[in-house]
Amino acid sequence: MKNLLLGTASALLVSAIVATAVQAETKVLDPVEVNNISNTQTNLTAFDLVVLAQRGYLENQGIPSYHGLVSAYHNGNVTAESIVEGAVKSNRLDANRLSDRQYINAVDAQLASLRY
Image 1 (cartoon, rainbow, N blue to C red):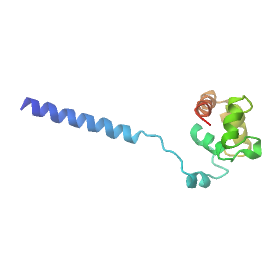
Image 2: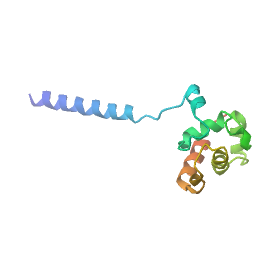
Image 3: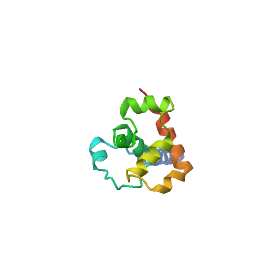
Image 4: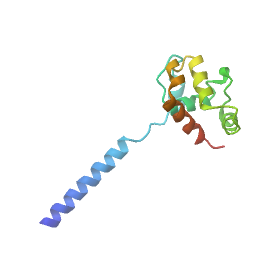
């Protein structure tokens, strides 16, 4: 009886942990969702901002897209700060993000994870 109780409790604990992990997964934007982000959306996550930059939504601010963005970042021609600045200029991000070091570091981490 004790083994049955212990086994049941373990199974419940494992299922609760798995359910929590599944709920905590990061949502990845699909192309349709990216196209639906308006020019006035100002609460973008660092991930969403890098996706927008990568897909060419900041080209008018001098930020290259796709492989050009990756190359420019790794060559030092584009920085997290320049992407945040471009997003602010295009009204996609609040101006207070320009001085938000934690947000800029998060954008930099997203950029660093980009591969050719």
